[in-house]
Length: 599
Image (cartoon, rainbow, N blue to C red):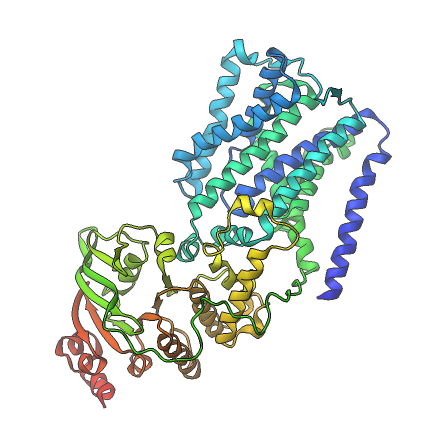
């Protein structure tokens, strides 16, 4: 790992030197202009990474923001005579305001619907640019956009303009780096991979998508303004879908989550046609073939290809994450608490229907502090629906859920998680390409009050991320997982992944933990180990609700049981009583198995 880190550093420095020295060998003003335009498109591609790369939304409006910003710059500079500082800020603000307006209806859409809606934005702006001739110049566009002037000094063509534009590339790269590197970046990664898991960790995916959409638009505004001042003409071509295709190509070719990948993609897309122009009419075919070949050989982009051959070395943990450290708000290891007689969570007359079929019908029961309540029943009886209603994934049609005296029935999943309801999933929802430590640490996002603004202001050491990792490491140590903290989750066996997901939920510091079939896929020794961990958590005062089909696993674990059948609660009580209940025996357990359990 250390050798790979040194090799990556050498390769990175060599690439940086090559990039810096490239313009020095350019012999013509045209080459300098082309490199300047590559910088403009590098900014555009970096901005696109926020929405497309960091949170995984296929937005097709980045080109629209780019062209819109160019028009705002052109109109204010060429027609109103405003200087660069005024037009530059106005262009960025205009793009952000447009993004806010678009986001109200568009960010609610999912997948290809979101892509189609954002595509429509560019087409509307293109039609306006062509038809509103008195303002935009119509199909001809606007000319006479001046070169930028900074502090009264004109930025001349050639080297001055090149350095000016590439200074903004550096600025955009720093913003991208700050966004990605800390706890906020981990949250973005979880949102991209699994929004449901993010909500279960008290992370609001909608808020993060909104922030990334606005930031993406703002950086596109920077690129559009610089483009207008660089070519000194604004035309409908800036709003053409070809710009969006070029931006998407840069992101995919370079690697959509790596800053340097966006820069490499921009340089390649801008310069490749020029390098191959000598092939006359066949250069388009050759250019397309080269890009397709890159995608075949490196489907994750050039940056991802480098990551594959030069793996990222895990950073050395700071002293903050020490063996002796234990967050004060984590349950203490000593002292056994008996289950309380006061309900910490109460479900009252809960009803949920799907297409007229009752998945839950008038279900009522309570969870006592420190108890382990098992929910049993045949497949389709409503067990998972119950947990999904309790965690806000489904909205109950009737009834209420009360946590600590406060009703949470109508709250969103992330708000319910923030109130202290943690959960695991029947189908694991870990982020496979993240380390065990970071999968667990991201649960501290809400507790550490991480935000985009704070991420921008974070120095070299991210204290929030360090505290989150410290907390996570202590939880992992409780489960005996601290030795694999740096391992990728995707490389772990199923049983270990189950424990990691439980550890992640514990790192949220919940008061109630809901586990959906935690013993599924585990062998007997793993089940026994899991049961020991759950009993230890309950002994420290954590309230558990366990959905499970494995009655042997529940026999010595559960302190209370409820049984569902066709969405109705047919029995509730101590396990010994449930095993003898005729309705439970008939609906689920069977007489022979009931006799074995009661023995």
